[in-house]
Image (cartoon, rainbow, N blue to C red):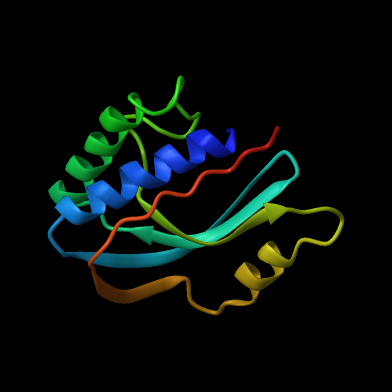
Length: 124
């Protein structure tokens, strides 16, 4: 993604953020996943109609900013999450070590979201 497209994406998210009323986000459990030479650790987020509508709105509006807003993990089956850490791993995988060291993965946390941010990972 070029810096120009990133800037337009940031503008879109900031404008969208101004139009979104605060909403509750409920975190349910800590998860871990890996693919290729990447790993992620984060929180699973309880899906609500507000989150689903916001997700669909962002996907619609991104089409005005980027040529291809699709992602392999996106779509109707998208699982809401809050990333704690994502990155490339090698022989040593600190994400997995941290996840496996947690005695309990289930959490009961929530917060009021007052703004929206969009993060992307460029691998090329």
